[in-house]
Image (tube, rainbow, N blue to C red):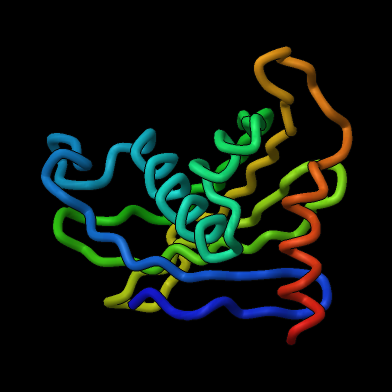
Length: 148
């Protein structure tokens, strides 16, 4: 259920369907808490790819964007083989990349987890931390917002 981008003047969202696999769960058949971070990464990659500035483009333009902060709020657990939708929403892109996430159970529609990540631009190979995102990224985001 990978949709198109949803765009407003202040945000860009994308939804990714995930499934709790055997290797994601603990002995009680619930998703181990650390694996929710993996689900966020999958959704973040899909969102950035749809924007046109995924990790391959970052590397090709000599930038990397390490995660500098991560916050998660666990509300309920996903079970083995349960499917969910991870909605990733880019809410800040000028000085840093800030993305909010919401994971919802496909079966119940209930929110399972809320999260947020922040990433800072680093110019490579110097390893220089930047306090603004590179124009190549911000121009892609602004073009998408203008188009809609």
